[in-house]
Amino acid sequence: MPDRSPQRATRGCAGSRAYHPSVSPPDALGLGYKRVDDDENLPFLIATMDATSQWDATRALRSWERGHLQLIEGERLLDVGCGLGEAALALAVDLGPTGEVVGIDASAEMLMVARERSEAAACPVRFSVGDALSLNEPGRSFDAARSERTLQWLADPQAAVAEMARVLRPGGRLALIDTDWSTLRLDVGDDEVAARVREAMRSERGRPSNVGSRLAGLVQTAGLDVVAATVATQLWTRWDPDESPAPDGCFSMLSLADDLASAGQLDCTATDRFVATIHDAARGGKFSMSLRMFAVVAAVPTL
Image (cartoon, rainbow, N blue to C red; front, side, top):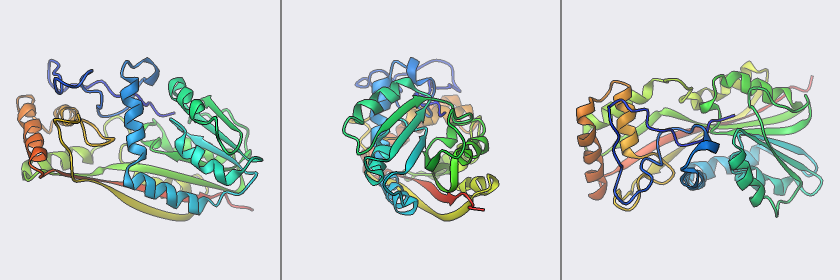
């Protein structure tokens, strides 16, 4: 299951700095998720996840996913890495009272929120703590499965896709949505800043952060047939760093600077200037950032 708590800054530089005096605790929107249930910043994480669910790209891909999954009344849907459960609960409308949604996540805290939000669900719902790499579900027991922004946090995305394929019935459908962080582009009117971010995001360090563009290959390796694939771009053009520690649903620029320092793309003595350059550009209305998200729907052969 995905590790979904705000990653404590894996500092490339010694010491610790607060992001902004009005933000407490600092760096609540770090790069990554890790140990959710033990994290003191859980409310910030939940707010971030809610914000990410409202990205234009997320909403567009979920709408596309719904159209291609073609769920019908009475079917069973599995959501792996369901988080707060809002995506699966929206699809429950198509399953009707005789269908079922099963959501699995590594975080008991996230699932508590999901259960609270599922009280008015359109079909029976079950949320369970589980492992995406070893699903505690019988084979051929679901008509459809989905996983969104989860594979990028797993040690073995291919094994997770194979597990989802295992629990699908012949003809069952699988929808995957994920990000390719190598596509992150930051424009603040400074070519050096843009180049540093672009170069740092090219490499996957410790997790498959660029898995989004590989989704079709993953499902094909698992023996599924690709039905459709698409891509959406999330764009940020407005952000006031004095009002919010990070662009909506994203990470702070301090966390980005520290990540670049850890990757050797930024000297420790230059992190403050790097952050200040971005903040000043944002205050002047010269901030733009984009990120591509990918989606694929595949089907289990009916042979």
